[in-house]
Length: 163
Image (cartoon, rainbow, N blue to C red):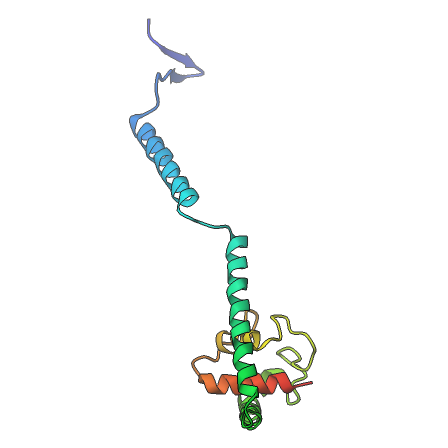
């Protein structure tokens, strides 16, 4: 007797097993999944929270190093003049690069108010340097290709004097 049945003019055939290509693809996919999970579970992969914590720790170390350099630099008699020179250069650079977004008095416009006591991305030297050099999402462009490290330091010093 035939294994084929006919209902409403449609012939049905019972399959004993799935096509070979489907079995092969399923097996390859399962093996790939096991290898992939094993690689990420046993290769030292970390979660986003662990990565953020490590990044924060590195940032804090950099800030501590920067503060140490500041304290050794402020003990000499000429550092006050150097900071004043940075602020003056930063003010001049601010007037040419930043006024269009932050306004003449840095009170904001297209960009945020730089005279506020708190910034969205932090008000430390390192945070401000990163904002100027790398830019920030939502409108702050990166100026790393337009200004050098000394000019960024001048801008940072000037921004920190704003009240």
